[in-house]
Image 1 (tube, helix red, strand yellow):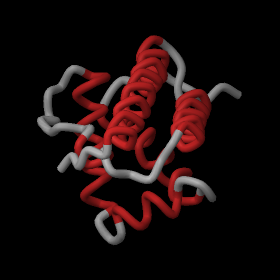
Image 2: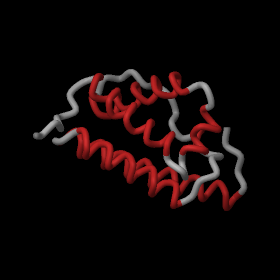
Image 3: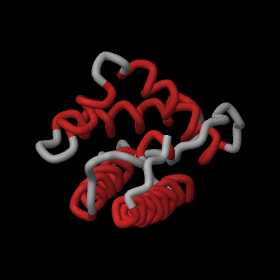
Length: 130
């Protein structure tokens, strides 16, 4: 029985974000990094992620932040980004189908690639981004 459906509204964004970050928190590699940084602020982080993906996928402009600076000093490398992207892709594929699901995976891949390159550049050049 097919339970996957199109990403059509904020409830779908919430399902995607909540499911994905439950998997992040439980992941051996990523969980400790996210849990150390976010600590007891998970509800705030999730709300921000709802707004981010609502803006990106639904073109409902509720996010106005700068996504990279909070990630700039994270102790991460290619393995972390590959794991993050694999978890995101698996979550989308298990829950959703259609053009918005494909767009979510494409955009996540581009973000992971950009963040990975920027963090590597910062590490190589010993920049401190706040």
